[in-house]
Length: 143
Image 1 (cartoon, rainbow, N blue to C red):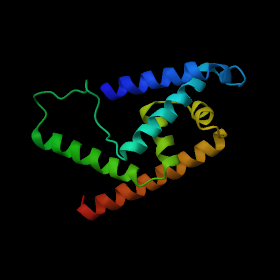
Image 2: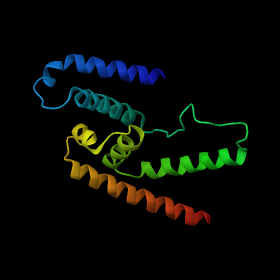
Image 3: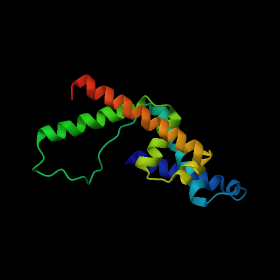
């Protein structure tokens, strides 16, 4: 939580200092602000060199959920996390913006300053790689 607050503060401070740069660009304010946030987060993670995928805090973990189910979910999340870490930085970014941030290809293309076809191609290759790696891992474990 503290990291999120620090990153938010840093993002808005950078935006405030660069507001005159925005006025010279032809993109929606939200895309411009998001690209500042994106770069701030990328810098943060590069310094840390790690990230974790976790379930949302308000996900339903009822009393009926068995320990085995929880362990399976944890293992699956761990496998996906490891597979994502093996993607290129660019592929990771597209996957995270698409799945975690739920952004459209158009929004991602503005943030990454690439055309939509390039973003779709990066996404498609990343998904193909993830599917293959997860399939191989599943076969290796005999599932």
